[in-house]
Length: 275
Image 1 (cartoon, rainbow, N blue to C red):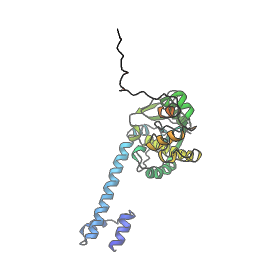
Image 2 (cartoon, helix red, strand yellow; image 1 turned 180 degrees about the horizontal axis):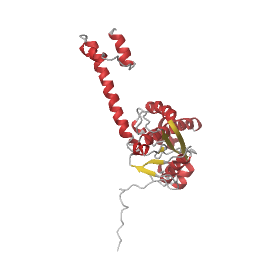
Image 3 (tube, rainbow, N blue to C red; image 1 turned 60 degrees about the vertical axis):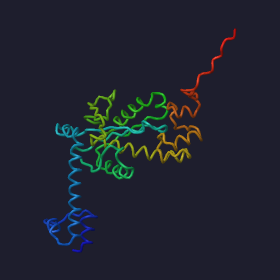
Image 4 (cartoon, rainbow, N blue to C red; image 1 turned 120 degrees about the vertical axis):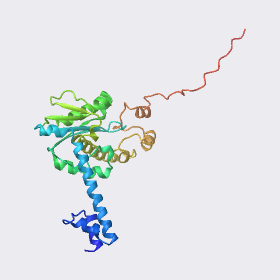
């Protein structure tokens, strides 16, 4: 087999070498063959490291699965910090023992990686529930409680309902299902991580759609977050219906917050009393 064919099959395409093939490549006198062997070894080591990472990522789910609970859900929300758009939450139930290569906290992944993982998560999920809190609810309840509302709605949308719930650093009131809050859960739990990816992809697509409805703000690009581009558009165009009035930059653009006086302005000169 030519070196070019070996590179194509065993490096680029990731095809498995026949038994003993790796040893033969390492013993080959051709430098190119040994280079193929080295790259295959790197791929093997990377796959082993990912396998260990995924095992750690199931540290909260595995004891529950081992105890016979087959409907373990993870739930997470996105869109707490933006100046515009709803909060979106997703709840995901994976089959016991499920492993999805690449799943992680959605913030640690690129948009391309999230877009590639989202359909795989959906195809392997037992159930997915989506929830959202609208801008009006955010402004009425405050962003923290609106986030809790979106999370509860995502859990209640699951069919079947979970036997146990893993939540990213929250306790959700009004649910009868046992739940466990996990600090930084989207990076420690495969079901919470999967939920964060599904929620993030869903919200990003929604904000891209809203760009067409409210052009000029750049929602498709910054997704409503307070970037310099968004703040400039807010100052130039004013707020639109999907802006959160309870957030200071939006309230300021609407004239709901008076201009701040300079903190360190010189005090007015005092006049001396004349006798």
